[in-house]
Image (cartoon, rainbow, N blue to C red; front, side):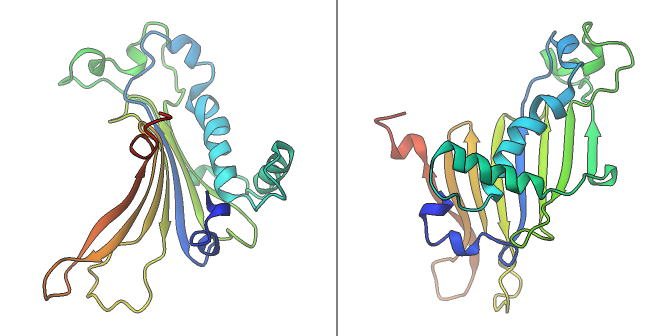
Length: 219
């Protein structure tokens, strides 16, 4: 995506990007599979494989070709640049039941009979990673994943720096490039535009490429 589009490639660095958030959210809990899940937890289940794969694709340098070996080599290079994670840069949690919910919403992780009593295995994890290289030095890469959350979603949210020399009285919001993996694959850019009329009122809008709409023949 970024290697084939001139408008994105020059901005793909710490001078323009403020942060990168990679999220994986599931609306359901372990639902009787807690005994299996408890041996791994959400970090080994999702973060150290799926989310790091996405991070490496977002952050890697341009490979010499699209051959899998060349892509792999660049992914390995950027992963080696990640600094050791500090506990102070992490948030861990475990979902509990909602007494006002319905069905499985009332069941917490420790209520699952297959989960060992008193388990501290995390079902939610957030970690801030730092990539120590010229392109990304100082930019936080936030990995977030969890079960029993408010929605089903996997996405990359790339937030850009504020516009320098603001002339709109602080009414502008940061631009974001969002790559939605599921549900409904899409790429969209959140940007500011002037509302119709004679005043300079700004509002946030989106340039949206939803794959099911663009590629109906294939999806």
